[in-house]
Length: 282
Image: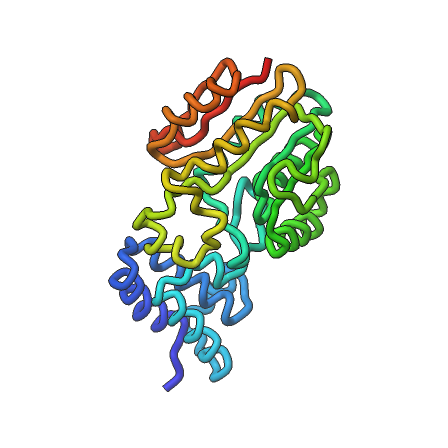
C-alpha cells in the first residue's frame, strides 16, 4: 500500500523523537526536510500535498535517508546543506556543521573590522565564517585558510555558489602559507575539544571530522599555537577572536594576556555561555 506524506510524517516523527530524543516540533521538521529531499520539492509544495502518495523510487530514497537519520547521522550531512547567518552553505562530512552559536563570532568580528580592512579566518572549513563576513562587508578583503584539501574544496564551492568574490581561499596549516602578511582582524573556530572527551563519541560529533574537533589533552593546543603566532600577523590595534568550549573562557583569556594582548574579553552566546574570547594587539 503506498504511503502518503501525511502518514509518513505521523509515523516517522514519533520514531525520531524516541530514537534521537528530539522534541516533537524538531522531529516533525526533520521528517519534512527528509521528505523534501527525497521528493525534490520545496516546503510549500510539501505542506499543500499532504495526501500525495510516494512512488516506489521516492519511497526508496526517503527510506534510505530516514534510516540513516535514525542511526544518528546529522541531518545537515543527509541534506548536504545548512543555513548560517542568513546564507545557505554546502556541508559534507569533510567539514564541521555550522552552528548558530558561531554566529556570535561573526557578529563580534563585524563590529571590529575597519573600513576596507583585511580579515583572516583560520580553519575555515565550509567557509561559513569567512563568507558570512565577506557577504556582510563587501569592502573588506577576507582571506580564509584550511589545511584540509577536502574542506578547502567545499569552501571554494560555497564561495562560487554564493557569488562572493572578496574572499581569497588558501590551503594552509594555520599561518604557514601567509609569511609576512598582516591583517586587521583574525578569527578562528579551531578544534577545542579534549582528545579524551566522551562527547566525541556522541551525537553529531561522531560523524564530524576529528581533526576539526579535538586538540590535545585539554583541547587548547591549537588555540595556544594560534595565540603565540597571531601578533606577528596583526596590524597595530588588530583583533584576535576565538570561539571555544563552554568551560574554556578563563583559560583562553589567560593565554591571550600571556601573549601580550590587551582589552581581553569574553562574550556570551544566547544560552548565556562564554563562547567567544578576544584581545587586541598593541
